[in-house]
View 1 (cartoon, rainbow over the protein chains, first blue to last red):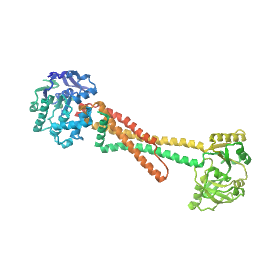
View 2 (view 1 turned 120 degrees about the vertical axis):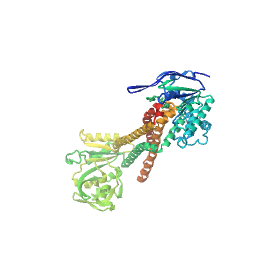
View 3 (view 1 turned 135 degrees about the vertical axis):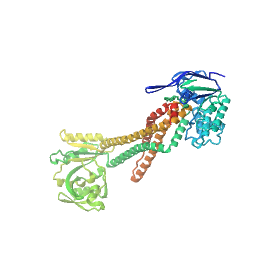
Length: 223
Length: 394
Ligand SMILES: Nc1ncnc2c1ncn2[C@@H]1O[C@H](COP(=O)(O)OP(=O)(O)OP(=O)(O)O)[C@@H](O)[C@H]1O
Ligand SMILES: [Mg+2]
């Protein structure tokens, strides 16, 4: 087990809006082990999503180094970063972020499209992923024809379809009732049991309870 | 992600926005429709005119005194002997006919008009390829006998007598009455007179009316296979010799009019083509506009795609293919519409207008280039979008 699978040192994120400079992250150092289930908690605006996006290679830090599996992420170009997001990381968001005009199956196939998988194999792999989250009967449904819980399952299926090592879930239960929230968390827990590293952002203590470790943030720093 | 995937995902997004896609294509459809139709019509029109000219004879040279109409009495002129001698001197001449002109006032459709009366020998009609659309032309016999008969140009005949087609009416020319025996078929005309609105009388009668046998205009028929510029040059040189080194006569042939016509039609094509081109350009700008709207509308989608592993290149290609598809489908539809219209025009007008492969390639190629040109910028904007901000975007 690599304890420094994800290793952040002195990560800063500074937003400049004209005259004003805002530091969303001020020097965060953090290690996450491979296969760990971590929850990040903190007040609104404390920088949780910002941190998560940097870990997920969606965003670049203003300063600091981020080693993913021993490799400096900053050294990658756009294409390589896209490949990391595609193959090694799966995202789940509070607002689902599904393509509204496409079916569940098409949504789940999206990462496969960019991974260069042969067309004929995509449908099969995507429907397997949907089956795993219990949606085998709703492959053809569009997001608008599904409940919030079902949408989030589609998003989870999409996040795991490429078999990533890391799943980043930013308030995945934020828009769901508590019953559905726990169902979603069970799915994530199951994925963690299969060896995936899970990073979860949440406001709710009972949801954070699924994690092995809780990281608390305040004003862009870890407390 | 291979090209086929890019194309299918672009098309599926175009299909998802059917109405917008169609409206966007409209500009392109109209532009390409305009350009191919204009090309077809101008080309077909040109060929139509050319074929008319060809029946008028590309082997005819006209020599005439350019100031003929204004000051006839003091002008340089030829004698009958000089004219007849030219046939011997210049071996390229197959036949020739001297021409005499009078202007007479005539009441046409209730208004007095100056009408050209043409005094010609009987071979004039044969040389020029003028056929009677009704009745007949006069004969050599009638010329010799000073017979007071005349033939009237089709247009003038209709104006004078309506569409009756009845011959035998009388026209008074300088106190002499001529009987109409034929109508000269409609022709495209060149040279100093328009056959369609002229009256033809035997040269003998014309000379008697004019009171002179002086010749101010001659029509030459070239022998088969003779180079027209050469014949023109020989005639010109010979006339210059007669007139003591001066070019008192203008020498023209149909073929030089043809090249002028070619030039004029070329200019018309370019002008119309540019207008059509501009409309394609406007269509292209419309496509860019819509693509920009589409990019900003789909910011979130772009963010999602990037989070799922799309590279800048993937996004760029997707949007570029979308605008290319809009342009080329629009272009294709424009070409189809143009083919349809040209077919209708051809059947209705009984003229063989057609769309050349060149026009299709031009129309399609132009729309393709416009698609790339106006698609690149929106696609570039799309590719540059920051995924984090895109997903925050409502
Ligand atoms: N693009 C940006 N420009 C300027 N400021 C930004 C930008 N993105 C985020 N911020 C600021 O950074 C801070 C941290 O934002 P972040 O989204 O990480 O908060 P969060 O902890 O996820 O909050 P929440 O629980 O509400 O989601 C906020 O104060 C926010 O206003
Ligand atoms: Mg957040």
